[in-house]
Length: 69
Image (cartoon, rainbow, N blue to C red; front, side, top):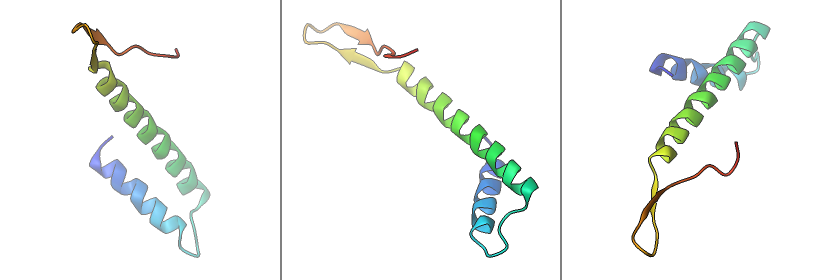
């Protein structure tokens, strides 16, 4: 997700709060940008969590496991 895409998301959000609102094309663009943003954030979070390690009481280091697939 680039800075330009994030700026466009913010621009569309501001415009949506105005009386004239968004056009149908802008609503579609906003939905697509939001979907891409959420995917990027989830990917970033998954990457961060993949590096988390848990130190048990006996001193061994265990990687964090996924609970659900």
